[in-house]
Length: 79
Length: 440
Image (cartoon, rainbow over all chains, first blue to last red; front, side, top):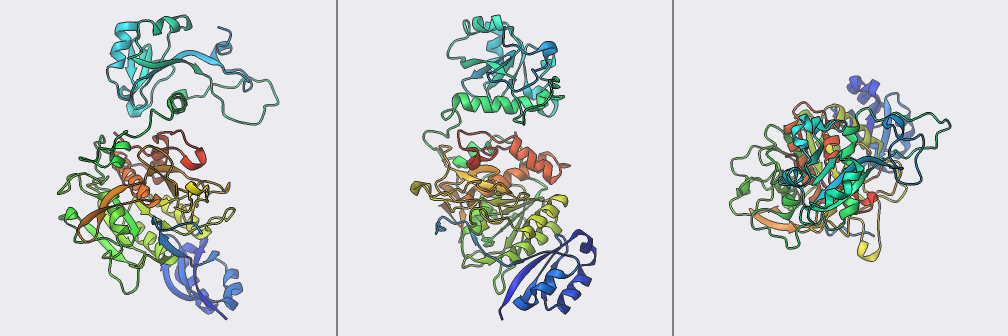
């Protein structure tokens, strides 16, 4: 099974208990890398199989796979 | 006049099939900021015309013109006068073609809306003056486009870049002093001589790399947003020359990064009290693709924390081949200001993306993005193209507005940027509110 990087937005109610939610995420299989207090986001890594449990945790508003980002350079041409 | 406004000055109950008029006149001068036009109107037509800058915060009293016969909007080069209709024609008599481009009757304008079911009269806008300049601005563009707002026929960059001239940064009295601006990119040439003595806070969010820029994209963007008022050698190329620089490296020297690094850097910038975040980065989207909920929520929270995020709309179009693609991620989030690019002739850049998705994903504003001169490592200068280059122009100008309006919220800074933008003769889906303009 694949393991990928994810970004999680926590809902407004959970922003005040980011550490608690981080612990619940760890128990659900999410390897927490960073907790971003100012914007209420948690970064980390998870196995595909653990995603349903992670999504189901109270306080998780959205989870998205980490995208590759590049500068918008003149060399960046449409496919 | 058959087409005057309805009883009591109120417009009729439904949107008309034909244009209706207010009884006032729009006089389009030959150029903006023609300080001699009010005097010419007084001397030749007997009209006393107030200046829009005479009104506090530019909030013109459109109902009474402050007791004058009209008002002159310097930035637009347009005067609105209350001369009676039968004076309209004679007005052009004493005025020469050298004084005015044209005189038009002021139209009544309507919000596009579903047909009303009743015949009740519509109320006049409570604060007509707040809306009138926009209407006039659109009119000016429709009358004079594309010639009026084109850039200089020959671009003279001996003293300043075309981007600073066309966005009126050169005319601005604001510097960005006291405003913290974060540029999240490939880092910064920390030893660039043009920035000697400047306060720079830097941080790398890329494992194993310092904030020193070995790519050049980030140094170019920081130069545009925050470069000096008087670089060692002209031209001037930087907007907010007294703002505090926060350089966040979220793209490695290879030019690649990830959502996570960008989010971590947004969090860092907010924690450090940055009022403006500039992001000339992203990834391509497909038409119909929904924006990132994670970034949208982060941007809303940034906005609530008084930080505006400004991002490049993307270079995924190739209009020379009739390829037009939608605004990229994360600029397609509704709470992130998406910046498209124009060239010095105010033509849309061939690579600039378009607002194609109804649920967010629009272009919000335009900036200078073709043949842009700025700093590159090591200690040098160079030219680049891209919505990446347009974005730091807008971010730097946002810092000028933030300095000029120290108590303004991030949402109010957004409004100042879009309401002061100059409309161009372009597709609104490419243009958004128009071409960014600095506060005077």
